[in-house]
Amino acid sequence: VHAKGQVAHFELSNKISLDNIRDGINQHLRPLPIAILDAKEVNGDFHARFSAQLRSYEYLIINRRSPLTLYKNQAWGVFKQLNINAMKKAAINFEGKHDFNGFRSIDCQASSSIKTIQSCTVKKNKQYIVINVAAKSFLHSQVRIITGTLVDVGKGKISPTNIKKIIESKDRSKAGTTAPAHGLYLLKVEY
Image: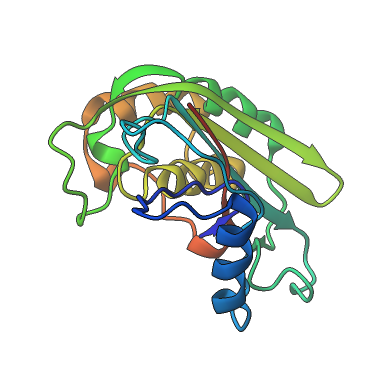
């Protein structure tokens, strides 16, 4: 999983300039493919995880017969031609408040599987297919399982009209495959 818009928080007892905080952390992160772009002072009750009102994820699929090169660890290469219109029809069914028990991993420890998805869209630009999903919170692997299910719809393995039944079944075995982690991006967190 990649993050373009990850947010973190921590408390400091000393007064340090925001620029020095950002630059100091980045100095330690230099060997890694990660960087702090901005630092802001927030209220004492702010929590990066629990104060979030909306999280937006993007999943990148490259749909072509040739193997991936530049995007090898940044997208899911799907070699069978996908039916984008069927995927779009199916995606709408994920929107709204549902019990997503069938769309979480076995490792999920959430006490409730009821989640409200604000939007779930599928867009295509040449060989690139982008799935965007936004909600206040998600279950473990939920976006990847939704993506895998939409790819199975695109391959003709699942009918777009069956998505509601799959959600209502609350049965993980009825949903599609879990998409690989390397195509998933946290785009933005809104507070």
